[in-house]
Image 1 (tube, rainbow, N blue to C red):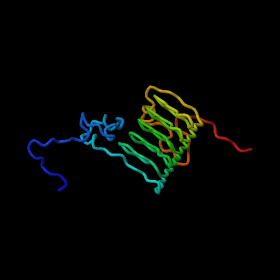
Image 2 (cartoon, helix red, strand yellow):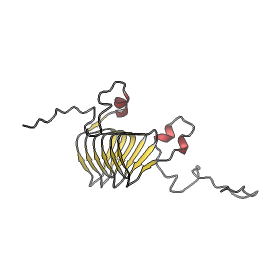
Image 3 (cartoon, rainbow, N blue to C red):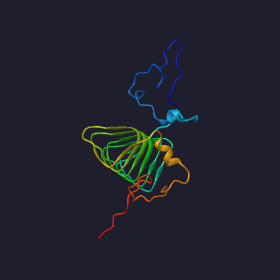
Image 4 (tube, one colour):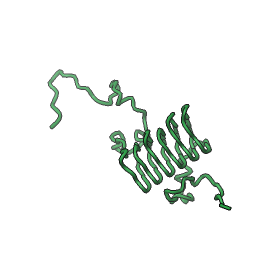
Length: 178
């Protein structure tokens, strides 16, 4: 319907091929390319738009781009929190790029806090990059495999409600009002 059969001798251009030099192929490799599934290379990011608010946990095997608001935990392969994003809850992904506002812990292999980001919470990482101008309030802890600690069966706090911003790995005494 949208394609035509090439005439003999006509050059065929393949998108995403080894010799293609388009901005789309310059995209960094994400966890989707490491997935053993047959549709791994066809995964496209799930986008949560600016006008969308989710109250509850979000789980995906692929890539998620958040431009809206989430009150809950996010678990995915790769996560991009856009400029206008607001997340209240913990985040776990192999690759995490934060441009927006996050109150909660981040667990990931490669984490980047870009200049306009605002993060209040602990970061558990293998690799961490913080750009100039980024706001980060919390502690950062390096680990060879931070995601293994989350995936461990019987991990405490796996069902934390969205209103809790502390992760199960950080143990802080409750603040008592006197």
